[in-house]
Image 1 (cartoon, helix red, strand yellow):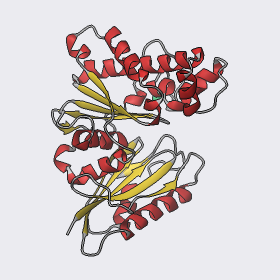
Image 2 (tube, helix red, strand yellow):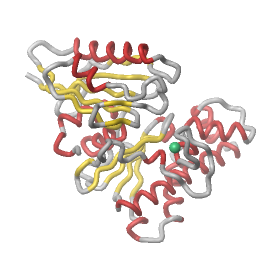
Image 3 (cartoon, rainbow, N blue to C red):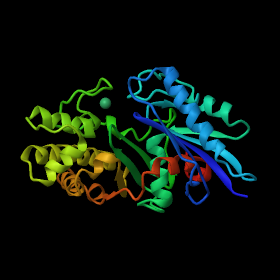
Image 4 (cartoon, helix red, strand yellow):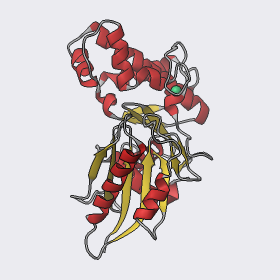
Length: 309
Ligand SMILES: [Zn+2]
């Protein structure tokens, strides 16, 4: 008999669910996805959530059991009440996603955390930083998220939002952010913000993939755009390391693949902004997770409960 965790990952463009075992492996055929998106109504989002959870549950092999539900969500969240308010899904503000999961999968514990905490747990478990006890996991994609493991334990904070690196301000930038702030690293360096900046400079592409191709072809605007974003990410990491003494930062997410050079640009920016050896020591590595990482991390909330806050 295998003990499975029903993992759920809620993001700005899709919600996914799957069954994950105690080694961090997905049950083949149990992974389902449905669209979310900023224009969806609350009812549409709920329909997507219910459908992926029920489908994943329906894949449970006879005789096996589900021992818990792990939910990773784009932030912000309110962990005590199990509510989600993803910045890029305006129809859901204080939506009770944990209670929905508890209704659909009764009788087992459900745990809700930020997706950033989940991917950090996954990097620590089977990703780029096994056993690294002072780690920030970071996702650079449609938005920028993150999570922290400090002293070997994930740190969620009283509301569950610790590790929200995307809304840390970086010096020298004044880009307006959807959160209402100015100069947040997400407002500069997320995939969509980077491509929009390039477009404002006269670049004619549309997507992050276009920008990657232009960068590879030596397009000067694309190079400037990637350098600008990588510099902002590096500055944010240097500040985070100054605050909490990180050893490792693992960066994943679609836009982190724009070019392998991105990592050198980030490291360069840290070196420039690192007056202290304890800041300069931080290692920045590519994520060791596949596209399954967010689901594996959500499952870690149950399978690796000893590491979470
Ligand atoms: Zn912000």
